Amino acid sequence: MHIKLFTTCLGDLFAQEAVLSTARVLRRLGHEIELPEQTCCGQPAYNSGFQADARPFVQDFLEHFRGAQAVVAPSGSCVAMLRQGLVQFFGDDAEARRLAEHTYELSQFLLDVEGLQAPKGHYEAKAIYHESCHLAHWLHQGDRTKELLAGIEGLELVSFREPQLCCGFGGTFAVHFPELSLAMADEKLGDIAQPAPDLLIASDQGCLMQLGGRLGAKREAKPQPMHLSVLLDRAGVGK
Image 1 (cartoon, rainbow, N blue to C red):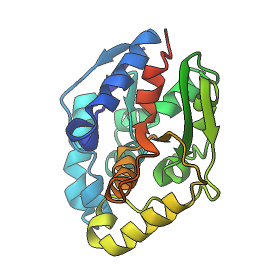
Image 2: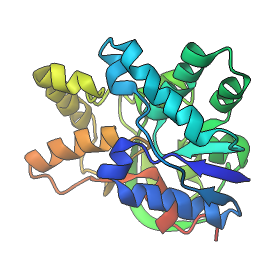
Image 3: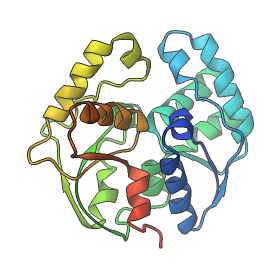
Image 4: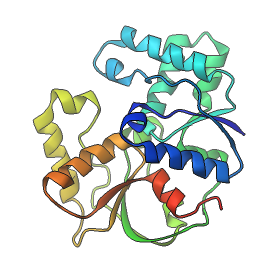
């Protein structure tokens, strides 16, 4: 397929490795990758109550990504925003509706389009997977992403006692309510059974920044945050 890669703001500024790993995995699976002009998905404005200010960002996305067979992003929250925004703001545009249906978070694409339920790969580590709220509830992915991890040879996957707990990031939520945000992050990390696993895997960089920041503040060496795409890339998925 001809895939247009949406890097996201956090991916562009803070998680370039996750973006590059996403491209490498998709290329190894035989897809053609294009990197068009990027824009914000509009979520910070939208979640802050400024829906009219979010509209131009979604319009830019529509113009830059128009015609793609598929759009893939290493972020469930940005994909959720784009799917909603394209229909809410431009629902009378057939291309906007089509693009909304063909914009995927990476694990969604691998599972639902590529049919990669049991990827071949190898990575020696003990890991725990955090399912982001947007991926689980807005995109209805639940914990299906763990199907990709379960197929990696050498990877021992453990679970949170309460996997539904939010990390507390929530984009602008963490800015407006920092004390509550940090308390939620600490609750989430406290839900990890000891001894801690080697890796904390997530599909959203915002969650990884939030939880990784708290781990760093507490000077805890484990688990190390790692984006799902980086793990799949290092495991050699698609080779």
